[in-house]
Image 1 (cartoon, rainbow, N blue to C red):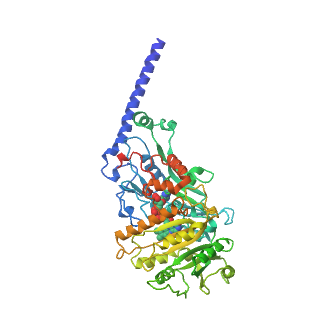
Image 2 (image 1 turned 135 degrees about the vertical axis):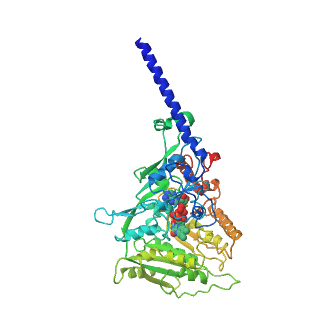
Image 3 (image 1 turned 90 degrees about the vertical axis):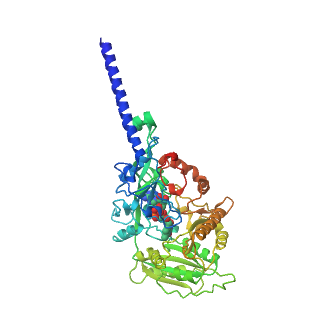
Length: 563
Ligand code: FAD
C-alpha cells in the first residue's frame, strides 16, 4: 500500500515536472521566436530600448566606409549594455543575430565603430560621464580619476585641472572618448616617458560576455532552452577588472579593438598638472640629424616631458603647422625648384613642464637641452603656454581646417610603427608616395620606447632590438573638389601597398596602428605571435563574435540568421 502510494506520488511528480518542462519550453521558444516578427528596432528586445539608426552611426572621421546599422542604442548605464549583450550572446538557434559596435566619438578611419545590419551602442550617452577625482593620502601620488567610457579626454582634463591634477599620457587630439582610445593605444608626445594611455590605467569596468557554465545554464529557465533548443553561450556581465582582479579581461580589453567588451568606466592615474609648459620647435634639413636628436631627447625623461616631430614638405605645410604655435617662426627655407628634387625639412617639437609662475626654471632646462641639439641654427623657437592650451593645440588646427571646408572630408590616413632599424628605408618608401604641393595635412614622425608598452595588453608593436620604434602618421585631408572617390581609393591602395611592404616578413618589421586590415588573414599576420592569444581571448569573452564587427577580424557565428 505504502509502496503504491509512493509510486503514485512519484508518477504525479514526474508528470508535473514533465508538464512544467513542456510549459517552460513553450515559454522559452516563444521568447526565442519573438524575434522572428521584428518590424522595427524598437520591437526587438523588450526592455532594451533600441532606436532607429541615425546617419552618424554610419559615419566616421575617415569618411571612406559607411555601413548602416539596423538600430542604435543609447545606454544610460552599464546594465543596459549588459542586457543587450545577454540577448545577443545566446547560441539558441532562434535567438536574434546581430553584431554590436561601441561608438565613442566616431573618429575611426575605416568603419571600425560601425556595425552593418547590427547595433551601434553610442557610449557618449552613458551616464554618468562625470569625472570623479580621488586623492588618497593627501598627496598626488595616489590620485586617480574615475571616468566614464564615453567621456572625452578634454572633459577629463577640464575636470582634473580644477584640482590641479591631470592624466600623464595623452593623444594629440582631445575630442576622442576614453573607451575609444583605450581600445587602440592612445599615443602622443608623452608616451616615450609614460607609455601609451593603455599603460596608464588602474582599473576598468567592462561589459563583457561571460561564458555560462552548464551548471548555471540549467539552474533557471535557460534550462529548457538548454534541453529543448540548444546551449546558452554567454550572458552580458558588468565586470570590474585590473592587473590583479580579472587580469585576463583587463589586458584583453586594453588595445583590444572593441573585441572583448565595452568599456563603461576607467580609473586613470593622475599627476600634478603644471600651470604652463615651455613649448619648443627646432628645424632640421637632415632626417638623420632630426631622428638622432629626437632619440637624444627621449633619453632625457627627467628633463623633457613631451617629444614629437613632423616633416615640412613645402610653404603650405610650414604655414599650417604654425597655426597652433603661438610664437613667430622666422624660418623660410628653400624647398627647391618645382621640376627638380624638392627638399624636405623636419621640425622637432618638445616641451618642458613649467611649475614656476614667475621666472621660469623651464627656460633653463630648455637652454640646457637645446645646447646638445644639432638643429639648423638659429631656427629654434620657444614659447610659454598654459598647460590646457598646449594639450588642446590640435583644436586650433581643427578650426582652421573646418573654416577651409577640409574637416568633414575623406581622410585616407596611414599610421605605422616602425622599428628604429627600418626608419630610413620606410621614410624613403613613404616619400615615393607623396607629391609636395598636393599633400594636405601633417606627417608626424617621432620615437617611442617599446619597454613602456605592457606586453600583456592586446596592442601590437614591432619588435625592436634597441627598444626604439618610430610612429609615422600620414594625416592627409582630401579636398573633394580636387580628389574624388577614385583618387581617395588610389591613395588608400598606395597606403596598403606601402604597409604590406613595411609589415611583411623580411621587410622592416613594421606594424600598422589604427588600421582596419583588409582580411582576417592580414589580421593574423598583423598580430603575429600574439594571434593565438587574441583568438583565445575572443573565444573566452565573446564566443559568438558579437562585438566589434567593424574591425573585420572575426566573422560572426551563425551569420546566416543575421538580422
Ligand atoms: P570610435 O571611433 O568611436 O571607436 C574606435 C574603436 O573602439 C571601435 O572599434 C569601437 O567599437 C571601439 N570602442 C569605442 N568605444 C569603446 C568602448 N567604450 N569600449 C570598447 N570599445 C570601444 N590616436 C592616438 O593614439 N593618438 C593621437 O594623437 C590621435 N589623434 C587623433 C586625431 C584625430 C583628429 C583623429 C580623428 C583621430 C586621432 N587618433 C589618435 C585616433 C583615435 O585614437 C582613434 O580613432 C580612437 O578610436 C578614436 O576614439 P573614438 O572615441 O572616436 O572611437
